[in-house]
Image (tube, rainbow, N blue to C red; front, side, top):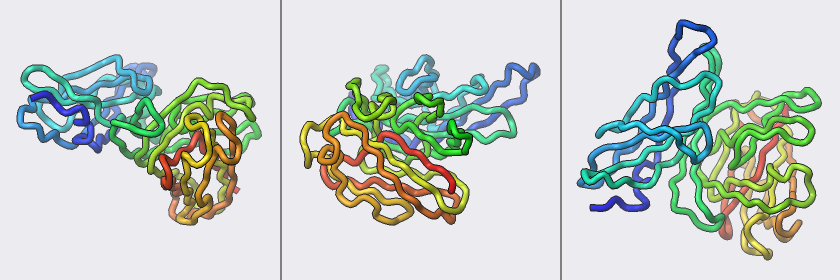
Amino acid sequence: MIFRRLFCLGICWLAALLALTQPAPAYAQSASVDLTWDANTEPDLAGYKVYYGTNIGAYDYSLDAGNQTFFTVPSLQDGMTYYFAVTAYNASGQESSYSNEVTKLVQTQGSSSSSSSSSSSSSSSSSSSSSSSSSSSSTSTSSSGSAAVLINSGGNDYVDSVGNLWVADTDYVSGFTYSSGNSISGTTDDTLYQRERYGDFAYAIPVENGDHSISLHFAEIYWTTSGKRVFNVYIEGVLVEPGLDIWSLVGKDAALTRSYVANVSDGFLDIEFETLVDNAKVSAIEVEFL
C-alpha cells in the first residue's frame, strides 16, 4: 500500500522537548531535542524518519527513528534554531509527506528555550499540510530601547529598516504559511508583509500581566479584488475586527496596520483569527507593554 499524501494529518501533533547536555568545553555546548508524535495507522507501517535543519521547511539531516512514536535528536548546536518534521515509511521504503513542523531554539542551560511548529503550502486559499501549535518567548528590543514582542508571522528572523529584530514565527496555534515576492506599497519593510500565517489560527504570546499595545500588520498578497478574504480578529476574547477585508481598505500588495489596547491577566496575550470567507491571515504582530 502506498501511504496517503495527507498522511501528515495522522501526525497532527509533533511535540519537542529540549534536553541540554553539559559538555566539557564551554564554547561547544550541545543539546538534544526529544520529539513525540501521533502514530500512523496504515497497516503496512514499517517506521518513521525524523528530518531536521536550521531553515523553515528545509531539512539537511535525517535519522531513522524505527517503529516508535518518540525519538531524541542528539548533538544540536547551542544558540541555533532547528526545524523538525517526521515522515512514515512502509516495508517498500515508500515515504509519506512531512508532518507538521516543530521549531526549537537551543539555548544555554538555565535559559528559557522556545519551541514552535509550522506548516506550509503553495497557496493562500488551500492547503494539504497539517497544522500544529507552539509555545515560546519572543521578546525583542525596539530601536527606542523599549522591550517589545515582534513576530514575523510565517517568516524567519528579520531586522527591519530601523534596526528592530522581528523573530521567526512563534507562539501560534494551528494555521499555515504562504509567501509572495511582490513589492509591498506603504512600507519600507516589504519582507514583513510578503509572508503570512493563514487559516483559522491563534497566538498565545507570553507577556507580563497588564495593559499592552498591540499592532497587527496585514497585506493582501493573494487576492485581486474585495470580498475574497474576510475574517474576524479577537484579542483576549474581544472582537476587535469584525469582517476585516484587507483589499477593500488598501488594495493588493499594500501594507495595513491596525492597533489596539488590551489587558492581560493570565500571562498570555491571546489573539484569534477566525475565517469568514477563504482564510484569515496576519503578516506580523507587534506587542508592547504600556
